[in-house]
Length: 313
Length: 280
Image 1 (cartoon, rainbow over the protein chains, first blue to last red):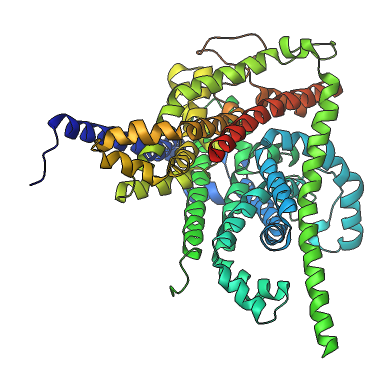
Image 2 (image 1 turned 180 degrees about the horizontal axis):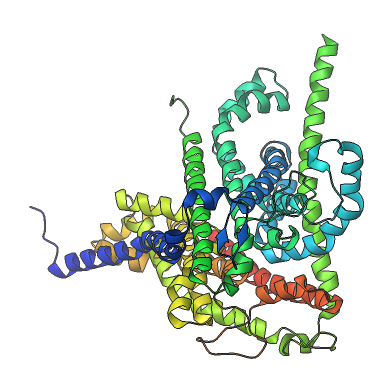
């Protein structure tokens, strides 16, 4: 016969469990709050504006209450794409170096340095970008690119330093640790016998990487890159300090632009009318929806890439 | 045959070099940032820099005293709400989080960590600034607290899961009710890890700028009131940096050095605690 536990202990279990459930649900409450508050702030704008015009219009004029967000969407996409184009291959390279190639001491130092990269606040990156990166771009890099590749619309126009290229470069440095740490995490969970099998069959280290490790980690790498993309889309301070903050659309990377987070940061504190605040809150909602979806998709991808050996999808 | 194997070896060497090059591409900007923050920041360092108010343009002296206090104040206030909720959610995930609710919470916490901090600033604006009709430190602290909760939940869960299950089983085997085992055995053992997670969350909150821009705004004077705008190191760096004045740029580097020292100290203490635990 099972001894009965005293009522006190059973009550303690139930109370503790309930308390924990409430605390755990706070995370879900946070999501709900974000959605609810942003929606409530945005409503005054969307009773007056139409969504299609909001997304495709190019005229952002708070005084006239005309809000076209396309320049911000364009700028956000361009800078994020530039950042990914640079950061993705570099991150894969770093991850491979750390997991496959480096001796133990070098591995520790590199991991440590990547962690420090992640810990530097965004405003400090912006400060560095403003004081160091932009002068270099303006005096050396952009003239060079304009001279060599100036026939492409991407590199036309006067080199100002500020602009999409500066923001994209700065972003790529900032999202490197995000992507790298995810890829390293995925590669660490790979069963050793995959690599050992390839090496045993006579593959060089690079061949083992190319034929076995990278295909195995493919989904995880994609997940890491998407996570980096989400981070690049939402980055505010560093971008607004180097992008020039011009609500215009240009094909050239040398041109100044604007991004969704940057315009929210710059205009929110001085937005007086409800419609203006509402339009900005609407932008925030768009940002939230996009980054939330991307992050969710990325996490699912990473989780799928860590399935045990032998499971076929 | 020899030619083919030589080519494979050469490819291997080139690829290894490229990967090492990737590491260098990442390390060079990092070293540049750190070097410049230290070298240019030290130029502005003095006791008065830590203790005085910002000076007008052109005046010598002045500092970020109120900004340092403001950052510590708002982060501390954020901890009052953010730490219990975040750590509590983490404890929930580790102790009772294997069901459907737990999976939903865990997934949401992971995904929320990737949400832009500026969106959280808008939320804090909507909750507090709109009600109070002016900017305030408590709004800034609210934004920081919301930011803390998801990452805290995940790191706390990881720290608690490090506690060996044999401890829990021993407690249960002795007849201790599960809730007491969770509280007095598992959590007590994980306390150091929880402290590490909390310090890391504080370090991250101290470095946030965007959510403070339109919640706490900024303040050029000493302020200790939660219902008034408050200065912060991060916003001060931003204001100094985008100004057209050279001496303010120098102050921006100085303030950046202060910020990195603060965050660095918190992170180092957090890591030392963690290492001590794992060693024992």
